[in-house]
Length: 432
Image (tube, rainbow, N blue to C red; front, top):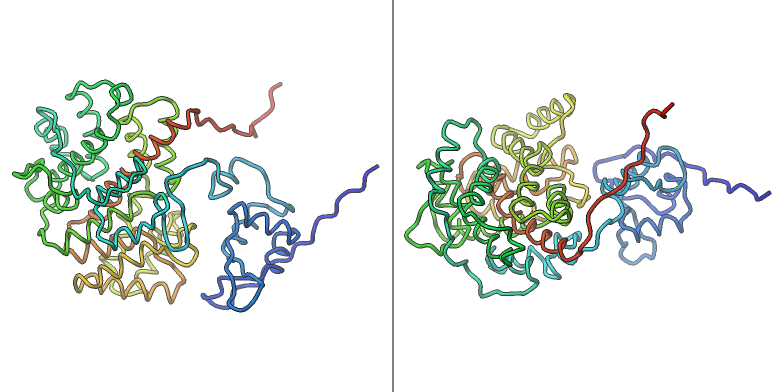
């Protein structure tokens, strides 16, 4: 008989002594998981645990948050369980992609830092082309005139008249099939028009926001080739000036893609099943509207714009958590030390006006007092408040910007040429 392998004894991590204690040693991490150091290194190589180097020392430190997450997932067993849940809930990578890499300094689009692209004054349009085609075209400052199907503004206005709680995503969900019906178009993959269709849809989505603005009508302009950032400002009825256009364009770029977010995965699944572009975008739009994504961004906006101080804001967050909700806008798993996109947007907002600085101070107080690290949504809320944009503008920028990434992943999934069809482990009752 072969000898049974003895599991490594597990040791519970001691309580945190302060909010800044975010790292633990390799010995502590291995003991907490009940694994050998070699297994810990394997988890790091698989992207399940992140580590940082210590200046002047060979020993690396490990993010406590990752270890605590794995402790819960392993449920007292030694070794990482190979389950669908373990893979799909911020686990081991499941798809190959050449579009976006997530790094501590923020998303990298096809080898180029998204933050550097935004800070360097690149347009959202040029970044979208980079994501879609892999071609770096810094000279692209705007797309050609958006082709608007005849009758679309009137039909869209009639469709949303009297609709309560009209949002950007709801407008996008209504607009997409109307474009297909009124345009009487075959699927984009039959016409070879995926990229041109994407440009058209993003332009129309942006103009449709005029139905939420003070004019309450589809935006028409004398200049048909305005940049998307300027179209957005005009549609929501905001003043158009150089600083505002730069700020909105900056935000669009940082929102453009974030690897396999839930909505992006929805778009890829639809693409893998052979759906046309508009159907893929509808799948993504529906997913992105959820309370953990765009709706959560709206909740974060409510908290930030209404709270008078950090204590009041944290009390409201605890109330939401006790009711079974999720605190929106904080502690995204991809960035244990805080979302670098949020940092850049908060810095930009602080330079745009007193409302941006006020929210920035509130966010800093909450982070210091309660170890709640801001994510993208918080930065977007601060930016839109600094620009005096209407309510829900933050989630609108996020949704419109993310269209670029959705389209890129649809194209890549089609090239991969396989259907995304994971298996489930049956845990129901046995048959007689």
